Image 1 (cartoon, rainbow, N blue to C red):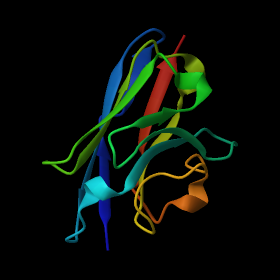
Image 2: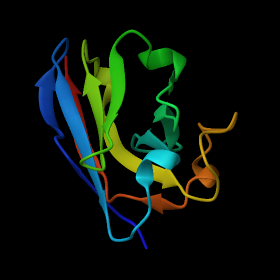
Image 3: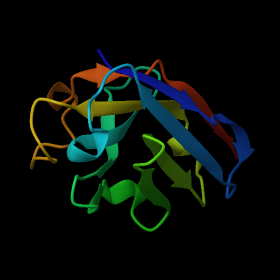
Length: 129
């Protein structure tokens, strides 16, 4: 079993920044081998992929966050981060951390929630105009 614990959410004004963290624990997995992603879900909307960190250090982003969000990971700490800058009201959502331990690395379908096996409890991000 893998436990993922997110932190860092909160309320900011439009144009502000937040940094989310996700600490992985609970097993002997070498987390750096696996694809880890950030998703978000706004009220009444489907959960959508925001960014992913691949086992080779490469990163992937949804078009609507490119240039504003940065995903990174500290393998020594088993921690995934999401730096969010230039936040907009439409970024308001619950943000979830996830990991795909069924295979090594991210796939073409990294934005699909079904690719991931374990999820954190989510952290609320609210951006006011």
